[in-house]
Length: 302
Image (tube, rainbow, N blue to C red):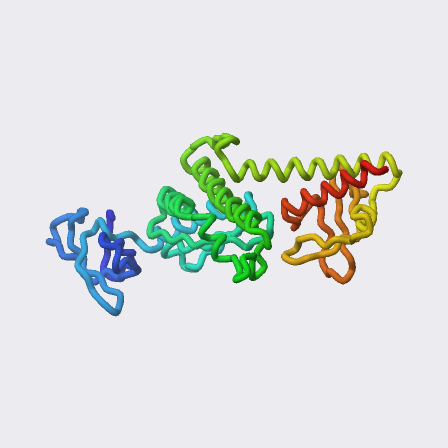
């Protein structure tokens, strides 16, 4: 620091990272005729303990808080533009203490905590990147498997869907790291190779199935003149339940959206107490494949 005065509020960055925090300057141990340099010994205290530190270890608390707030605001804006939510636990902005969360396509409320002691963007990005690297989708999926081998506490019933969801969460964190690096360090985001990215292959499969369902519904409309069809007709009166909304639900109809012909809508029986599914929302990929097979069989008999 260039200037220090007795009674000044400062932040001590403990080199051993044990007692970093807000302190008060109690004494500046230098000759009155000497200037302040990085190695000047400063006595600081926080009402509980005192320590003699070198001046370079101290930072004006208000300047620090301003820089941290600016960084948190920047990160929040970038993250929110990618549908993340960011909550800062330290209202005084002495440190960076963030909870970053985002819902997956299967409605998992995924989130993680990040703590940083400085107002450096690189440290924050590195912390998020380290979390990404340590995140194991298989290990996380295992935490949500019930005693009968299937999902519990609202997790998907099928293990393949559960792992797919965890893979998606990890991919979302990687994308956030890329966005932050692009903004703060000018690192261009490169699209991963499809053949080496399991999560992207799953995404592509789901996208293809959704497109096939929509195309098949258009073909059914062309033959019947109706934009929707009863689920009982599609299933040959079996009225099979499907897995969705973290439960077994019974569709009532499926058809092309009246407002947008590029969308399809699944309407559920009243007792299911769940909203319509637009373009397979809240429906597992494996279940969408089953729906596509029902539709194709129905179309073949028209």
